[in-house]
Length: 214
Image (cartoon, rainbow, N blue to C red):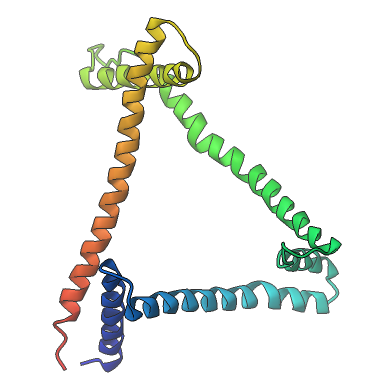
């Protein structure tokens, strides 16, 4: 018997049951587990940030690299209280605006390439798919037709929501709304299924942890 391993398993079992007890109603055990998680996470990330950011920046400043102090000071400006009536309280907006601008400048091309460009590329496909012998591939052709209908009808749905178009656009928009509902339902089902898998894994952990022999 490995005492350290079994002790860690027992502690994990107790904390898991304490978290699950919050399903019934808030209680001291659940609040203790919640506070422990927040405290351990905050302490862990504080230590990581200190040893990976603050300490190297301080050492670089000691070696003469004073430019490293600019992002360090900008980070400290974020902690200025927002409800302060002092004029210097507005200084916290400078690093916040810089972070937002840089984040947008980095993420917009990434999201455009990963989502919009990929969706446009996959939408521009042959309507009738043929194999090397010139025979029609039924499954690929059906998939191409559904993909094109999905894109066009979804765009019509976005137009029909804000204007009063003709009957054709309204009918096409209803088909697009059907595709939108399928996408939302699939995303919700995927999220629910992943949570159920995680829950089942924790239940399996509790059952296996309860078999520890002392």
